[in-house]
Length: 207
Ligand SMILES: C[S@@+](CC[C@H](N)C(=O)[O-])C[C@H]1O[C@@H](n2cnc3c(N)ncnc32)[C@H](O)[C@@H]1O
Image 1: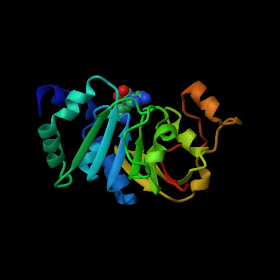
Image 2: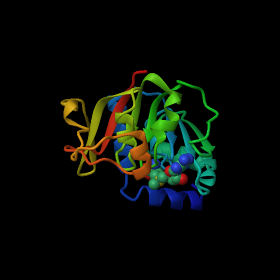
Image 3: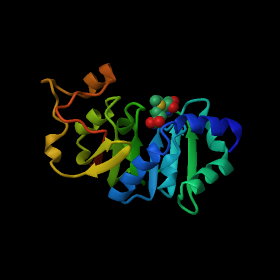
Image 4: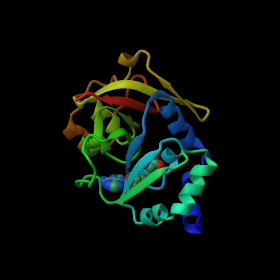
């Protein structure tokens, strides 16, 4: 890898292999060929497990990182990833229309990057999966979105990830009585406290 990209990746991968393990656990639970990752920064770990990944970010450091094609392919090889990975990058704001087909992707990834589900679900196939963590409120946003149903939770312990599909009705129950609305989530920009928490959630697009 070029030194700048290598430095960015080393910082991203501080907990070595953490995201690799996360996406591997998702790949075991969900059949996905093409993934879309808005707000990715330099987290290229989905390409270690999914053949085709389209990354979107507006940070000024990201175009240089994703332009290091040879370096990225080397990283994929080091992680025993797909033989011919398709790695695409869009430098832009995911709240603007993206030049991507509708209902095309099998997996939409939303990690620590705002309301990805609100703006990018149109690109996810019906039957496809949203992987979302709760910290920026996007899991709560998906939980009130009629296009989604909860289909799994991801627990993490000792750096390992496990997808669970049991007792899903016991998740996403707010600790405090509150009305969860799009407006309230926009205003707070934060997650909702739940009686039972998970590292992340899997939702299936149903409409
Ligand atoms: C906290 S970082 C998380 C990066 C990565 N998802 C992860 O989990 O390691 C948030 C990233 O989302 C990007 N981002 C936030 N809002 C965005 C938007 N509207 N359009 C494109 N990128 C966005 C930022 O530029 C930043 O790189």
